[in-house]
Length: 408
Image (cartoon, rainbow, N blue to C red; front, side):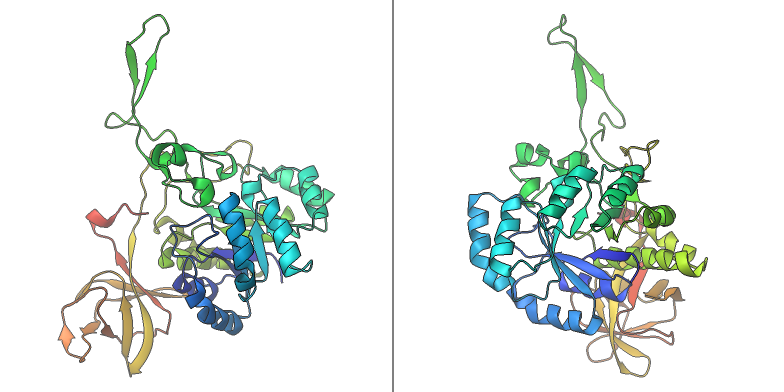
C-alpha cells in the first residue's frame, strides 16, 4: 500500500462511512481516554459492531489514548487495559509516556504505538528518541514545515511519519491550550475543549500614564475573532507531502458530522489516487470541500510564507446532510434514515463513494405504512421512492436554507 489516508470516526456511523468513502484506516476514541470527549466515542456496547466493520473492510483501526493523564485517569487506564485489549485495534495513539510504559507492560512489547501530535515532536532528534523508545509512528506537530518533514524522514528512514492534511487547527502550539480550562473549567488537554478561541472578543489598550483610559481595538460589530484559526486544507499539495516521505495523511474531525467525514474522505481519496492515475476527475469531488461546513482555509504551517492563519470568517456551509439510504425494500423504494427535514419537491442530491452527485426532484416520500407524505422528519422511519441508481450507504443532501448556513 502507498501513503495511508486516515479518517476520523467519532461514532459507529462515522466509522462505517469513513471506510466506505475511501479511508485506509480510521482513528477512534474510547469514552474515558480520548481528547474528544464531546464526540460520541465508543463504549463496550459498540465492540461487536466495530469488529464486524473491521472484518468486512479489512482496514486498520487506531485507538486514541492521547489525553494528558492525571493520577485518577492513569489508574483508570490500568484497570481498563484488559477490556481495551479486546478491541480490534492495530495501534494506539499516545502522548503520555506513562501510558506508553503501561501499554508495553500490559499488552506486550509487540503493541504498535503512534505518538500523538500533542507530544509536539517537530525535529529529527526528538523523532529519533521516540523511535528508540519503541514508537513506530510519529504524528508530527502541526507546526512542522514541509522542509523539516523531509529532513526528519531522511534522518529517521525507518520511522513512519503522519501529518494532518485537513480540518480545524488550534491557535495554541500543538493544541496545548489552557484558555478553555481558565474560562470554563473545561480542559482541552483532557478532551473537553469549549473552543474558547472561536468566541468573539472585545479588546482595549491602556497606556501606562493614562490609567483607566482605554482605547478600543475592534473589528466587526465591536468584537474581533483574533484568536480563531483558519481551517487546514492541503488537497492541492498532496504530491509534495508524499514526496516528503510521510506514511499517513490524517483528516481532523471526530466531532464533525458523518456527512463531513464522508465527503472530505472521498475528496482526498480521489486526489490521492489521481497522483498515480493522473485522472483529473478528482477535481469534481474537491468542490465538496468548499460546500461542507468549514472555516476559511489555509495551508497551515507547511510553507514558510503562510505560517498558519487567523480568520474573521464564520463557519460556512452550502449543503445540509439529510439522510442515508439503508435498504431497498421494494423495487425503487428505499428505507431511509432521516437526519434533517425532507419535503416533497425539494431538489435533492444523492452521493456515493464513486459518484459526485445525482440530482432528484421527482422522488416520493412514504411513511411506515407506505402512504405518500409531503414531509419527513427525524427521528421517525420513512421510505423514499426514486428511479435513480442509488445504493445502501448513499447520502442524501440538499442546499441549506439561509438560517442553516453557519454550522460547525
